[in-house]
Image (cartoon, rainbow, N blue to C red; front, side):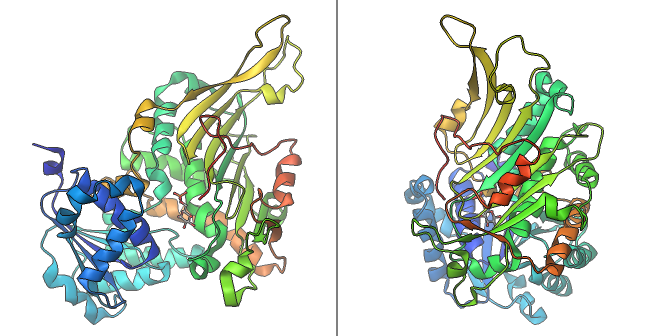
Length: 494
Ligand code: BG6
């Protein structure tokens, strides 16, 4: 029996099939699963959206995306014909209850997956319409993209409707950062190496920095992005999930609820943000045109250029529990920054007393860096003797760039997550209480900004964000890390 034989047959109904996410990420990932022989013999995808498109045109759009990916294009000759035979397209309005029955007759398998790659404000309506059309049975799964909601209230509304119609074990809330290879490696490294676990607390760790920086702007998605901004687009989900994976207690086993229970505990231990602390702990910025010719956010937005949406956010987060008392987590993310990179950097405390003459004791402290992109790997900085006369100490790096990663294609996060949805494994998906805990913690910031007439601080496109972000760490006597690739190279451009 092959791996694919063990995969259940399924129908995948993709709402928003004509959108950026579906075409750029989901459909190429499905193709990759197919080309790797990881889909069963019998399955189908029905792409749904309001736009009138023929099946042929839909397939052309999908193929164009795959052709644009150097890694996947090579598999087109062998796999396109077989893959495309599983795809069809249906133009319909999912917000119209009557329209839902249009695809009922097209469903062929017991297992049906509804993937909502649409705006979050349509989630409740689509869920309700699926229910009314009798399509939300026991073997149906529903997949929701982030951000689920725009604030605590809207997230509560959506969650209430979805959980009314689908039990939690049929709901898959995607955060694609959880599907990234290095995030899973973080779990393995933490929970299968006792040398790290012993050190993983306030006694040995000074602080932790988590950065997701993007060099791209918002061109092409400006209208969507302007509704959400960096806080909802990246912080409420990706950054907080990375924080949870870094800070959580060891789950008692690798089981979806055991892992998610631990993440919820972290979210509930985050020190609440208040009107008094927000101005000193949260920085927001917006990119401006650069001297090198990069456009401003306002230019990218076009006609509605005057916006106070943040394209950068940095925070100091404290976790009030036994393990992390006194260890700040600094998080930052932004568009149009100097590089595309993502790193979790664990800064250990310097030795309590050095017998060597060290010019910068804290700069010589050990640092463990998990690099998620553009290259993936892990590096640990250690002190060693500078060869030659004298006793000069220098910092060197051990790096773990698994050969398997370097040689083979690392699956896109969506590939892994789609595969998990098909197989029914919820470990890497966000549970309802986890989602709500994240919104509850963040909502005071959203409300504070709503009431404030302060605009985000300007930063030049192509730099590392506003000066207030530097100050955020400088006040604590710290600096943001320079992001360096595993092979020593600087990050990439997105
Ligand atoms: C998405 C955000 O969730 O993540 C985008 O909506 C962002 O704005 C993207 O660009 C980044 O993902 P990745 O995997 O390219 O780092």
